[in-house]
Length: 334
Image (cartoon, rainbow, N blue to C red; front, side, top):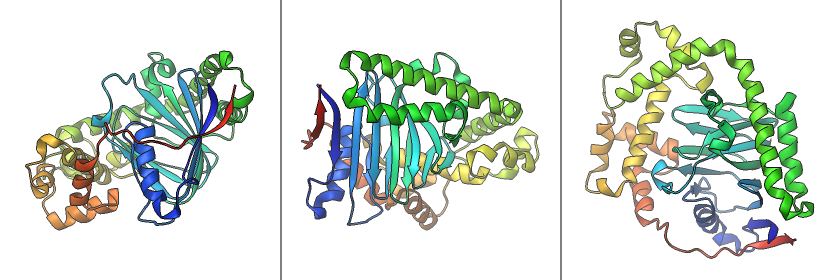
């Protein structure tokens, strides 16, 4: 059994690398859509090793973006949390209206069972882990409040956990296969401890977090209402607009930006839904609160890097069942 495998564009002619990368990401990571900002020159490498139920990857790539929609997930998928440790470049994570920008020396997590988007506007180096959700949370749902937030990797248990991740990949070739599942359990435990440490640091913010959840729930209920606004939210929740802005401080966006992001995500999901293929793009956009087709089209392109029409066509042509042969290069064997 291979201890480490390499997925790379190095084996592909330069003119074919972008398409190859997008296909490789789709099939290697379960329906993950990728684009390279329209760049014709692209290089990407992913070293990966499995430690029982935990997969650890070291990613080096030119600038690119990835998007996953919840509908792509298989019903047999037990659910994973994805952890990213940033070493070079910056990345922006977006999920459920939260936005987190992470820089070198930081890490963050997001939930692969829900829709998300990751933007890497510059070349990046990262360690990426897929962790079984239930094993990491162990029923402690408060940890979910730390998802899509920048966390420290330079001090405390965060530093210990992130250093252990880096070392695990480097030592994968020398780790006996019989011990790898136990090492995966150890990594999961270290990351859980690091999250609990971070959770202790944010406990005083509980009141703001509760308010944030109230506002999120209200927005989700009214997302299709064209009249949804900061004034209407403040009036219906009986709070000040200043308090609304404070509640969104950890999201990295304003309440109005959150509304726009969530509407765009709902529209994207509808454009990818075959059952809604007969509905016009404008009809779908107006269904989710937009009142100007031109404004919607610009917003969609700025958010997802493609026009609504191109996005819908790309989703239509995607064939998850097609087998794509990856020329994997085996780095080492037991």
